[in-house]
Image (cartoon, rainbow over all chains, first blue to last red; front, side, top):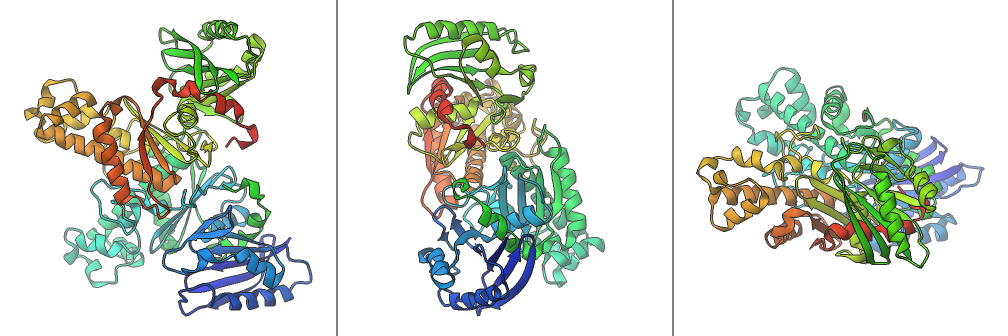
Length: 312
Length: 312
């Protein structure tokens, strides 16, 4: 089966011709941070045309990953977070039919990435998976019994970083208090670090406050860095237990930029959940995601294969 | 439609003849804390026979609510928590067919109660609901798009009280740390209160430590009681935000003994979630459950109507 895949991020789109679990050809488009989606669509269309011309076999459809909440039932964007504000009003399926003569299925980009990991990556053959993306924010996605959890407004399982884990914690950008994201994400790290006792005496005071430097300073024996690292690891591990108790997965997958320190993070989380998660049936596995930026593109085939009646 | 319903708790079973949203007849059986289910089944059978004899109309089946994890796909008990330890090995559907000539569907008692509330109680017409039971423990159940969330091992959405909300919190009986249940449940209240600063000076020091006394002492102006009450309210409200972010409900339902103080608890939680939950689509409603101990019995009709292929 050959399909086209689009993974639309805030400032770029990856377009690909995909056959089963292989990306045959790809094009990456960069946008000058377009506020709207309409001005971007012609270049996506051109890229998809060029990819189609590479294939002498018929194309079964287009899987379109979008960086916002998607209503899969209606096949429309449900809401966006400041990016592509015109997207909820666009009928992308009609656009694809009209311009390229192909059916189009829309999905949230993180859900599409998890499908990719289940189809061709670190969770092959798994049907009960929670994936976290640790980066500037903390993303989450849930698959239960082989189907992505979505909920009525597309939010279910999608707010992995916005589960409160700290009574009387910091205010989060989402409006809640003490979220994992406000305690241990890329954007929160400078805030958390600077408030830490003895921060001024730490190596952290003289480097840019990102996770690469945090793990590096901690490895060099800096005490404050070690304490902040422990704090972050604990928040991620608590969030893992929370997800296990909420969604009953057999596998936890971790992706995102912070996974450069996977050698420290994954064993910590694994040890914590094996000691503290309530899973009478056995042990949850903790794994690194494998596909990186290809994950959403490789989710194209399972998305297009999904029967619409299974959508929830 | 007429059906039989069984709601099996640790020390009693409620059996009923149910027509649509009405309990026509009921019998309550008390057991001397039987460790096993087999010795209890004959008296359940007798009660069901007596109820059947009350009906001149045909009976469509038996809905059996069980106080433990249930594998709805296999229609078997998945695991129990020390009670009825022989239940996972019993084929209750075969028992019902053989003894009474009726089909039987098995469900976790809390999930059955939520179905009852959606069918005939406080969440009629609602399809996206999270229900919490605040009592000795904290129970949780989730319905998404009209279907109970179950997960592979029947745990999904079922561990509402075991979502960690307190970094460096207390050890919970479930093995996790800082669970809502270990911070604000009936069993945790004495521990939390006795550790509170100035506990010895409080009215709480001279009364049994339960929620009735906590709310009463707080209402009489006792400062420590007010602080502990605020702590519990905050834990319940955080757990509500966590559930909203995880499961995307439109309604939160609260039941259980602690709801005697619903006049304080529900407005607090409602105000908190309206200020702190991320729900771009609108506002989550916070309601008291209505059916009390009848909820599971009134879940019988929707359970038996559920098509097996929808079970997840």
